[in-house]
Image 1: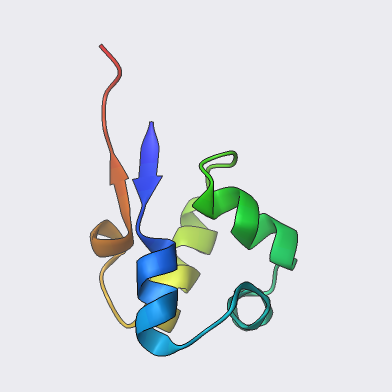
Image 2 (image 1 turned 180 degrees about the vertical axis):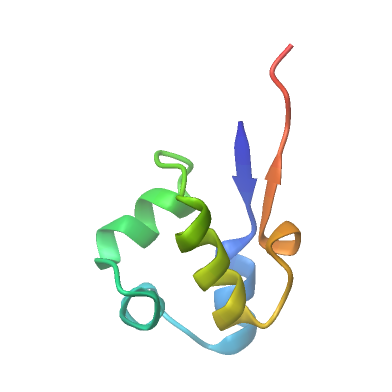
Length: 67
């Protein structure tokens, strides 16, 4: 399962979901679904989100094996 800290990073930069969505080229609903864990991002989208936040991907997204 992929977990994320998007909401925390958005708050740090003062971004709302709409602004982040605009910066990475997706709909606001996509950002909301990512934050809720309903959707896993493509590698390109994860990279773009991390670039906006100015951090490595692994500071935003972590993968935990389900065992």
